[in-house]
Length: 79
Image 1: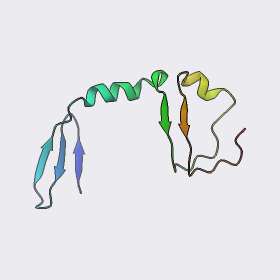
Image 2: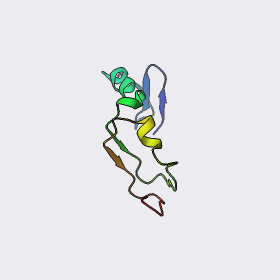
Image 3: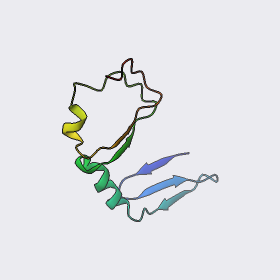
Image 4: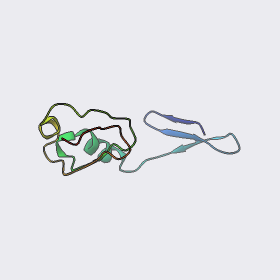
């Protein structure tokens, strides 16, 4: 399936036609996702993360984070 995105999104249908799709509220969601200081939950499942940086790193950049999912990663130590 082919997907193009700029200010509009176009999807290729099974008949090889392009259909435009409008995302209502996408700008609000995009703004929330890009305001990292306000994020409360993040899922980073299966991204092959092996190190999350120095102690206190996430607390500094994500002060409101309460849930961090790291399932399926390559962490060797929870400290």
